[in-house]
Length: 145
Image (cartoon, rainbow, N blue to C red; front, side, top):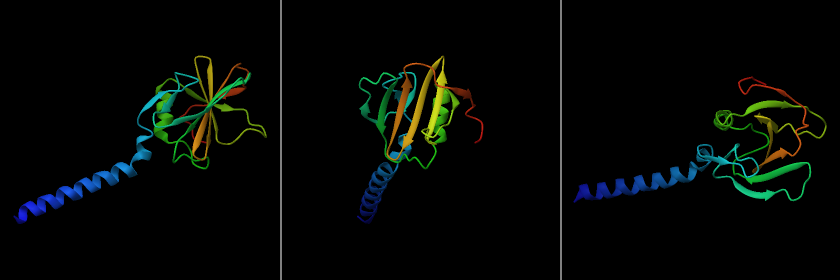
């Protein structure tokens, strides 16, 4: 009888731990599964990111905003996401900085296409210039800042 109680208690504790680990692990899950962006199908976006806004009639830029908990302007993108972007064939470029350019802006290029990724608190924006006049210089993802 005592062994059934111990077995039941152990089972209950394992289920509780599984629930806690699943709830706490959502941030890690965000960076393990990807799909193509709405405005650039060949650019990876975490599947758990939710599209919250999209450009309407902007003649210079096609942008999509994605909400994603745990992302912050003050922290860099996770290395696993940068590696996934690289695995999808994108190369990071250095954007020409001016007073209107945020330090959280990352620029990626692939086969003549440009994607600008701006990180904010709780969301990020993917911007695709409609004309490729953005001035950039190539910078490897492996380079340190």
